[in-house]
Image (tube, rainbow, N blue to C red):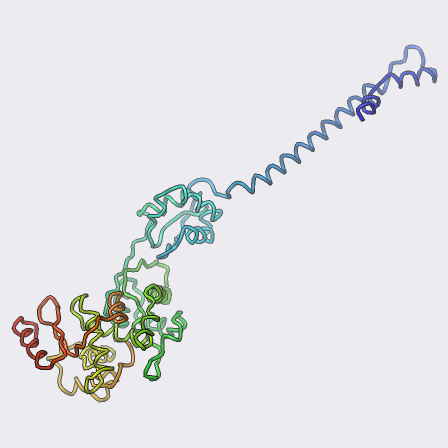
Length: 394
């Protein structure tokens, strides 16, 4: 090959051939230099094409080893929600969806390289569009970018009371929350939650499923968004607690135990007494209590609240109010009341699913700190009530 190439660009054979054909004296040589220039151009073009191909290939290969990322701090504004329990990948995917970062990898690599990324708090943040992964991370770590609209939903208040508090905080009417909560199963509550061990039919209700907590509410959320978030939190917490498994260990359904959780939340004056009150409820319903009823006045007040009547202290209720036969939450009703009577917190849920052992049938708050005395003896219970009176509780 080398010899052939050298021969192709050798002028001498051409000159000898022309001489034989009788080139005129004084005529300049033609063709040799021209061919050299053409050949040189061909080589340059070939090398150029080869170089372009190499560069294109390098650029393609380089794409496999670099991270797609925007440059700089971006522009415009967008809100992003970081949910409780979100991983860096979860956050990254949300950022990509909103076009905050160009790729999930851009954010996760920035988070991996910054130990402070573990400090990102749940909530809603203002970010820019088309930011670098590192800039997006910095904005999420700066609490000045967090939209603070925290709403505290207290433990032990009913759905009606919860919606009134949410209306004050969000300016969304109560009726919108009531409409959003009308179909609990549509909100994601599995239908198995609405089963009772006594076989009584359950009309699905939102009561008990609005988990009490502090929520960062995005200004753009609807009533349904807020209610669904509270339900999701309830399902997350009860899942973590293995609530359904613990209920089965008691030979009860999760709904049975949820109702008892709400009773304990309403009756117990201290966190320490939540489990004991739950035990009293179980003993009255399934033990040696004569009527197998709850005999808890808080159920009467729940029925009053549902009808828009004011809450009353037990001592201020008449006999007909306490034992109204038309009241489905009558304290003399055999068995569990139809639904939870409020939205219990985590400690009440724990107390009802794992109550301490005890044969208690009676309890009464005996001091102003809310501490109760428990007994299975009616005479002792009367003595405990006297102690309560002496302490100004009854």
